[in-house]
Every structure is written in structure tokens, then in C-alpha cells.
Image (cartoon, rainbow, N blue to C red; front, side, top):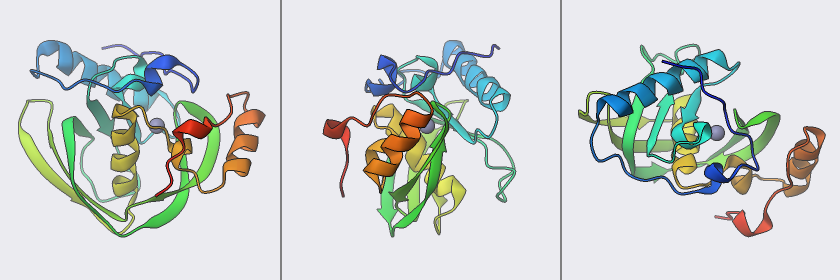
Length: 178
Ligand code: ZN
């Protein structure tokens, strides 16, 4: 296990689509442990996706034990979003954007299917705009090279926040308007 460097906005791997995991091998389990260790080492992190440590594979981890009635960190390998419904706007941040927060609209409810660290399939539903629901959608986006600022409610405000923290501007061609 090792603490890995978290890539910052502007680094290329964050924009690349990630590949499916073909087998939950020892190497993938090591990756999961590194993601967890790196997330716990960072402050305020409730989720971390493999591209954020420079690995373009479809893996992310979430730990919302502090705020929600969830017992363990959750590992998602090859996640598929089965269902999205409702919508809710809330402030969001990302470990690849230190200290930047911006309002983002997400589905209130999400149903996701994935494999766990032992390669077992599971289905999980997160509802009512919970932190878990938001985190799943945020981390899932990372696997497609999509970043939370692409979905921000207020582009000018977000650009100011990015500039304050010496991060590149919003890429207009990446903006998602749904
Ligand atoms: Zn993120």
C-alpha cells in the first residue's frame, strides 16, 4: 500500500476516459488499497477515482461513514449507472481541485451496479440527494474524463474560484448543460 500523488486539474489523465477492468487481480486490489490510503491521507475526501492518481481504469472508492449511516468504505469496479431520477443542486468539491467549491446539479437518486474488491457484483441505491448519491455521480464522471466544474451552475463564479487557487480556467467546450 502506498499514498499516491493526487493529480490536479490541468493534468491530462483527468480528462482521459478510463478502461474497464478485465479481472479483479491482485494488481487491482493493490490499486484499491492505494486509493483508500490516498483518500484517507487527504483532508475532506469522501471519494477518489483511479484517474485522480494517474491510473485510467474504471475504479473508485467512497467513504461517507462520517455523515451517513454506511458501515464501510465502498469500492466500485466497472460501475454502471442503472437509474437516475430527481435533481438537486448542492455545493461540491474535489480532491483534484484543492479548496475549490461550486454548486452542481445532480440527480437526487442513483442506482448503480458494480463489482467489489473481491470481484462480486452488487447493486446499490442512494437516495434523496444524499452525500453518497452525489459522490457516486461525481466519481463516476471521473471515469469518463468529466469533472465537476463541467456541470457547475455558475461559470463566472467557478472561474473566479479556480483563478483564486491558481488552477486553469473552465474549458468551455467541456461544459455539460442538461
Ligand atoms: Zn473528484
